Image (tube, rainbow, N blue to C red):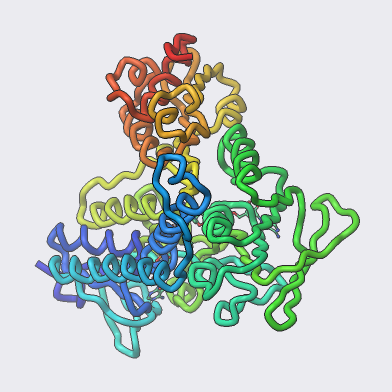
Length: 469
Ligand code: FAD
Ligand code: NAI
């Protein structure tokens, strides 16, 4: 039964993977729930301009490359005169987005979650204004997500399509001749891969000396090798000092990160992908006495409570990896905590995946981080080259790597580079969630022939006893 003092038991601000999941779970738990969302469609960054459209373009461009580069021909499939209909590709992407965002609308109706269409702003800890209307709730969850970090002095214009962010790069009207990507992180490599496969020359400018910060060093090195082999030009340890636009062309000024002589790169599209920042502007945090951290994030305790009574926060707007599945799990946990249950997210076991070809995935700590703790660690590695299914499919790039505590054998981290790494990493996450040892994985029967056997063999390699190498 709803508390009559308030319009709703729970009001969630933002309908991304964090917010929509929190709203649905709160409603499932019998709480009268509303969700404010200012976009035209539900699903947040992930469904509208993130995970989903990027994966659609990755899938389509992979098919195109397989047909064009003779991969199909190698298997006897002659797809002659392959050509690209970019509008059709964008159309298929749009269909996936529409179906999935519409699916969330259906789930809201089914679970009786009220969608308040518009931008929400706090007036006090139990009250927000949405579209000029005042709405009250006993508990309010901030799930406002994140948006692109701008590069000072570089103006993004997605309409014009010369200097774009990820949203613009998901919708380019033509394949650029030369795409310069600023930032060798997840977005830069995924969307860089899309446009390279579709025919662009792609140059990635990365400030650090390796791609994919946060991942295991061996994985980062492998990524450098593989993307170079695929034809991307990598300018590591290089910083961008400015971008100027002249009509449909851009000039990107770069110089060594450590300082030194600068040079310029000519491009007809520049993608700025240097990270994302939490969305808190215009939310009225001052009205509820909440401040953001130096990094612009809202701090919470373990239960996702902010310092202000009755106000909670989850997803990209709080610390931790900016990932949809992390936001979703926090959405479930926060709703359960509001309902008086015990909602927990194990932040030590959140997988991350880069959906390129091959995919790069990891869960738990990197080998470097494990060694830095001073604990003795054992590492087992197995190359995809020795995995029978990968060999059969002619897709042998990559490896699986298991990092275990040398004393207890408990698995501390798993890293996988493989065409199916994103799917394979789920097993590692499950094993770690259950506190598995490397021996537990090694003695678990894995179907043959599968890429997953590489993970089993890497676990066997922790004890020095892999079979197939
Ligand atoms: P968001 O999804 O950002 O949703 C927040 C919502 O709140 C938005 O819809 C916004 O309009 C709304 N909002 C904000 N302020 C207000 C307000 N005051 N009133 C009303 N509404 C408001 N993650 C993965 O795990 N896998 C991937 O493959 C992946 N791919 C990505 C690809 C790209 C190109 C990008 C940009 C991101 C990708 N991400 C991916 C990251 C993922 O999208 C985010 O981690 C995830 O969307 C965060 O969820 P969230 O609910 O915290 O916020
Ligand atoms: P990122 O943090 O992954 O990478 C940004 C890169 O830009 C870093 O390597 C950084 O060193 C570099 N950089 C920063 N400033 C620079 C400069 N001035 N010049 C050159 N390089 C510079 O951020 P990205 O790629 O923008 O993605 C944002 C977030 O979106 C990520 O945190 C990720 O969690 C999420 N995301 C997740 C995906 C997935 O799970 N598959 C896909 C896409 C995004």
